[in-house]
Image (cartoon, rainbow, N blue to C red; front, side):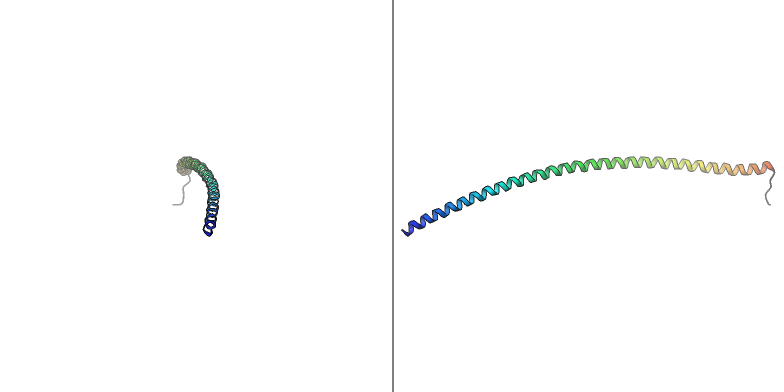
Length: 109
């Protein structure tokens, strides 16, 4: 009879272990579903962030292009202004000499 009691006790322990296994499996699957959802949400956010990064990069490159063009125009204008100022300086020097000659001013010799 001791054997029968042991067998029944073993059967009960097996059923308890199976029930615990089923509970743990259900808990695991619930967590796995939560984890899968979190991964999907993270993937979505990463895709959105990548789109934002690409848009930022596009805008940044456009800004750099516009800035380079603007700087080139400014440099061209500055070169023209310097050319005109040099020409005016040359003309003023010639004018000064012409006025001196016209009024008969002779510098120290």
